[in-house]
Image 1 (cartoon, rainbow, N blue to C red):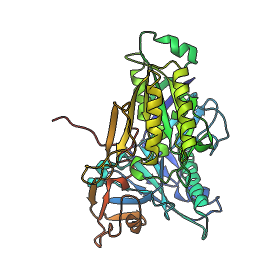
Image 2 (cartoon, rainbow, N blue to C red; image 1 turned 60 degrees about the vertical axis):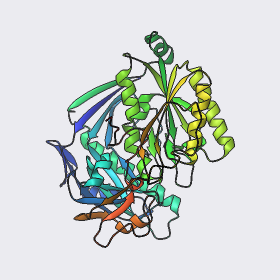
Image 3 (tube, one colour; image 1 turned 120 degrees about the vertical axis):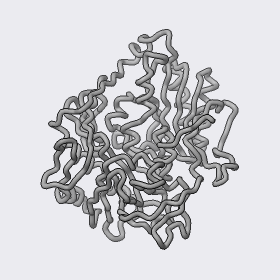
Image 4 (tube, one colour; image 1 turned 45 degrees about the vertical axis):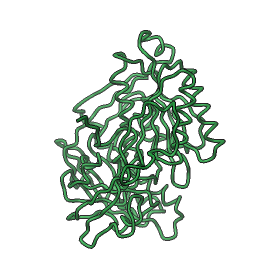
Length: 428
């Protein structure tokens, strides 16, 4: 499989009479977009707002972030099984509206939603302060059950991203990159002197609004399976999560997974990247055992010398993370974990809910319990009062002057466990 991504660099977003791209500016016909979203009878109202880097704008509560794209050649379409029909993606040509994003917001779905500040100290913690955001403020019909509310907002974001992506269909990209995933026998034989590395991609799937979708299937229903990295890059996985904003993998994160991109960058140089194993995060012990057993068997079956494992979420999923680590390590395969920490506001508490001696190579994305005060903004998109009830906030988080004191847990993407964040480590 060979996937060509054509990046159209977006430098601004504005409202206009037609949805199109001119001179690097994404123009949005808001009324057409609203009509598209309101085709869903579960949605009572939707407002379209714009938020640009550097503006004194705050967005909350944020549910998902999605990158607009369009499939221009090859099989499948954007978000297969959700927006496009179910067909295998990961090959052909897809145009990407780089630095543009759809942000879904509105009446709170679940308490684990987040904040995006476009400027100020909060902007330093989220990558989405650097994107040109088309924000959908979505209100459900009265009495809509919570799971239907989540589904309506999820689909609205995906449809909006597909709608905006169409503007790039005939535009010549500013940058083109190719990614290849050969058949497994060829992949294994291509670089015989380099260590073979598998990426184990843990997907949040605990239910109760903690969901991820693979080709339109709820990931809690799958067994661990091998997937081409180009399928991930081409929209096969989307977020349905209302988990803590700091380490939620939004759909944008799945579309731009930096672990996959970095493994491709090093492929053929100091390692042989042979594939991605996706696995779920479970609630019951029997399900955790089943998935971790199967994940370890798959990694061994592929003949891997090393595995990188990324987690999504914290607490209960820490057990899945450690189970995967222990069982893969005991097969003689070196493992590296990427996670974040919940070590208390003073950093003195146990960072993870589970641990094992085999977890001896761990990359941290930061301590989500660190607190920050976000100053008032000139404009708030959404519902500021949700700061008091979202994860990372507390009664009294929202101050009378509009400032908010929260743990960075409440900031979208602040400690993302794919490493897709703005935090870094420094050596002194």
